[in-house]
Length: 146
Image 1 (cartoon, rainbow, N blue to C red):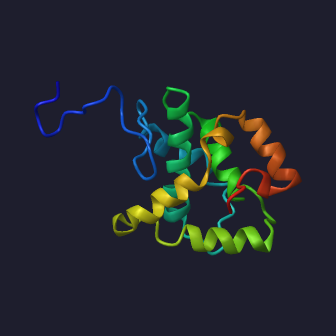
Image 2 (cartoon, rainbow, N blue to C red):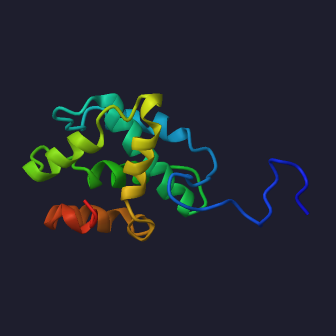
Image 3 (cartoon, rainbow, N blue to C red):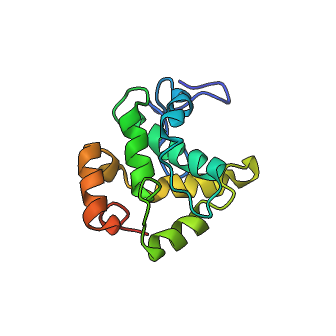
């Protein structure tokens, strides 16, 4: 029985919006980001904001598989928002400019978590190649709530 204030009364971690997804070695995603530096198409989104939001999505994806992040998680995350596309649609550009605004700031933690929660778990469980393929045909397939 939980008798300390920090103890959980149910087994496992709580789940829900803005609670995050626990996974091992999630910080490794920040090291992997350097492999994308020469390919990122940021437009008017600041690099730190794009990285903060997409690393969050990549860490969520890796945690859903119960493992640490790998380059495919970042490929999926950057693809979802068109950061690897030299000519994203105007609609996607407008959406990501609004969604990624200042999410790298700790003052905008809630906005960063909302951005991460925008991407459904079921979509992130798909192979990264399917995410890339669907983006190429219509980016809305990957972000149905956008």
